[in-house]
Image 1 (cartoon, protein in one colour):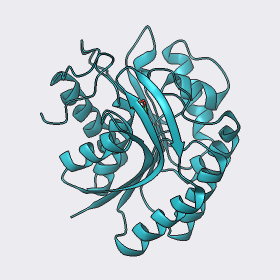
Image 2 (image 1 turned 45 degrees about the horizontal axis):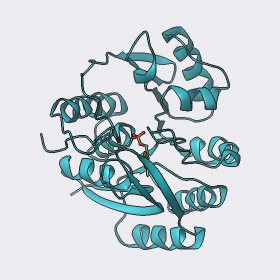
Image 3 (image 1 turned 90 degrees about the vertical axis):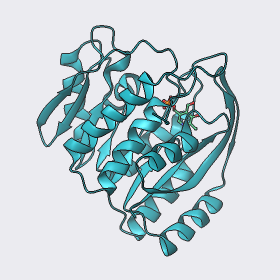
Length: 257
Ligand code: PLP
């Protein structure tokens, strides 16, 4: 069985973070492991508290995992501080980790900051260069490229700028753009647009986490990058279409479809 590790924050309400990652990986029939960077107290209406792991404890979790069950792919989500990013970078290098998917989580869907503002440079200069693919949404792409993105031409410009940060691919998720819901995959200068089927479902909490975990699962299963993204997009579409209406706010996806 293929093994996939998520390094991310816990969402106690089960919609995003580690919980979304494990559900996604299990649905892909890969063995899921987790190194937890933070506990969050949240539900479908918002994030009410964050308790960060110490860097020592994150290091201990990563050592336990890598020394015993080596992951075939890794998804990295919410990492809030410089010291946590530094530990992850150190361990990814030490263990020569493969198939690294970085979802540069900066804010929750409800608008709560999930990364300290001073961690941006460390994310950009140390973690992103190790990634095989990064999966920013529009506002995360704007933070990484330094200009605002209002249309598909600017998405492409942003992808070019962001791709200079790493050797891998860039997937910019266009879902929050007004004139399109298409995602742009940029691999070594090759551009592929994935047409976003607009699904009328307000319950989208955890879509970013789910997409990056689905990409990591597909990479672990041996698919190339283009097919991994294509398969992950179709997984998200299925999970959105199987509409699950839980909680008072933007509810979780349905992984049982
Ligand atoms: N990671 C954690 C722990 C979160 O709580 C959230 C959102 O609340 C995210 C990541 C990002 O979620 P989404 O996939 O909805 O962007």
